[in-house]
Length: 115
Image 1: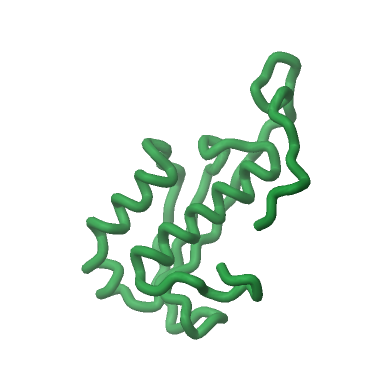
Image 2: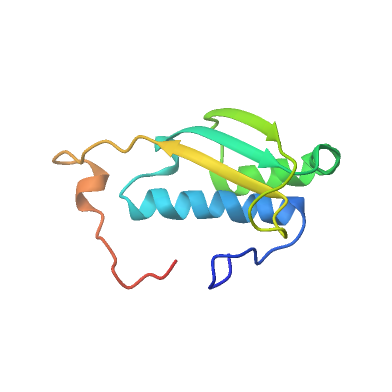
């Protein structure tokens, strides 16, 4: 994303990977980890481009999410809010409350990181 919240990356593969990285960033800022993501809904404006980019999309997915595979749905839409966007990812994460001895209880919160 750009400073105005707009799309900074072009193409299906790049936007997909950037969207997943944004999901991970938000989950981690909330004290969670990738494994806390339970559901992804992927919205695409061009199903043919998505199908044609599956190898790169898969590589991008594995680079960001590793071997974690939450429930996923793919939805074709006619357009997204930003006319430059070709993909949008919606995620649901359930972040357990930190317990004594849990890695989440010892992870420092950073107020200096910028989105």
